[in-house]
Image 1 (cartoon, rainbow, N blue to C red):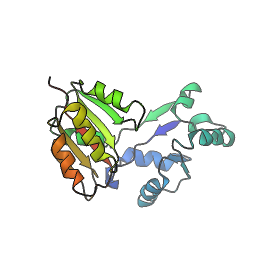
Image 2: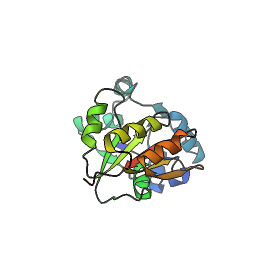
Image 3: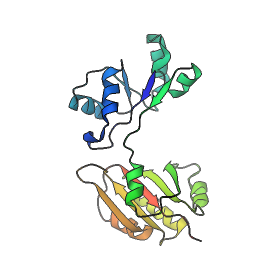
Image 4: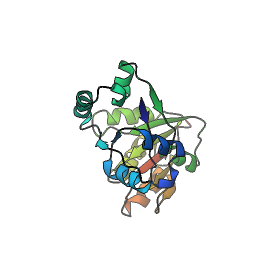
Length: 205
């Protein structure tokens, strides 16, 4: 059995009781960021083997698990499906849902875009999204936020409404709403830190 357990995006108390029960019962835990996961496990006094698993080592880790564990229940979703192993995904905290609701923009229909491409395909995608009628949700790094807001102005227009949420559920949580031009000016005048969700109004043209 493979369990996909969402961890809190900031406040550790946001984890569910069911998630804690699963973490206490499993044999090994794969984590994208072992430092954050170790902090979570230590807080709730859960002692389980913790293995790093992210985009830079996923193939190596998968092979290691195949070599070390006869039961394929510890492979990731695709391998589980390929081997007819049950996958169970627990619900939990996500950054984009509270950011979307906090934005004040329409939420009945939205498009989750994640991180924009850094180079190849970026301009093509922005041109396409300029005519998107649904509210759009992006993830962005603090280093690239202002640049992205400026690029969105170019393709969407400076008056397009948006909201930037950062450090959700954490001590310095902030949501700033306004036009793309206003947001670019606001965040361009201050250091930007934390994980960021950018919500942008769809076109009304």
